[in-house]
Image (cartoon, rainbow, N blue to C red; front, top):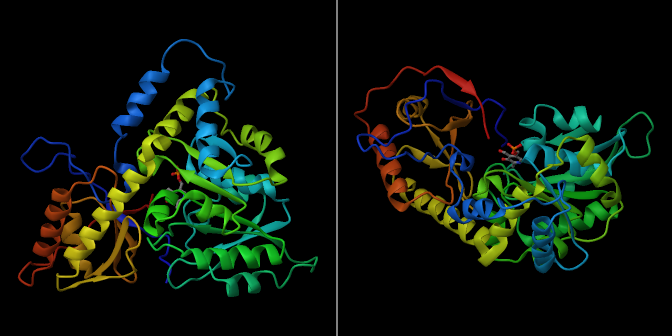
Length: 381
Ligand SMILES: Cc1ncc(COP(=O)(O)O)c(C=O)c1O
């Protein structure tokens, strides 16, 4: 079941200090609440010397591109972007014509959380399908192409999945390969929103070649922001594709070309160096597993989706959500089903998890009086 767009959080922010300690507090609201990984911050500082050409014609960008090619092979092409929304939209817009459409889960960030950026910028349509666990299936794809050739309908020309998914599940390699096969059977581009691709890669314990090339992915984004970058996402074509030629122009027109590109590139170079991307994602996933293990012992909390990556989705009574939100920041994922989302990040500690789990245990304990629903705001990032 896909969550509706309504994701709620307390509107009044408790100041972000751990109770009584003066220590900065870490939240489970989103992995983008985390700061910048120290190795990335050091790389930004190191890149801050002298003058280099702008717009990617610099040694930092060349080094970061080479680092991606070392992981993916010499045919891979990489383009850096400011953010995940832009990276998704640019990657797809470069490949599609306005009468063409993208088949994706209804829950796709592209559909629910990008303010119609794709529709506005690509001038094109999303064909959305409900899913049980955030995952598109070959059957969905086969249904989505039924009207190809009918001039009155948009023409499906791409599929888009999120890996890991919006509900924290991870497509297996077989599931991805099956999607890749059917996409190519129908001549569709296979796009992956990889805002959390690193979390999926470590969950599956595979390298990028296996994850992308062996499954037939044509283009994906590779998230940096949620994995310890200050900002920045990469658009990756694992192998040659006609859209590569158009991508630089689409990116510039789409306002995603950084003039001081060296600072985006230096961050990615740091992320790929010594497998920082895997170390950070592995840690975040492990913290989600720790939280899930604690939750399984709490009556009144039900884990709603398999915990495959760094997100835990849990159902609990609305009054317990309200009580917890009165003291913590996090989002309600699905108000109707009373499901919340808790995300772990690269800097989440074991004691953060234990302390958070203890708070959940406390508010869900039978004696806790219910708290009136809090004023809320829809949101999810
Ligand atoms: C799956 C997914 N894709 C894309 C994005 C977009 O990233 P940004 O907020 O940088 O535009 C997000 C952000 O939450 C996301 O969760």
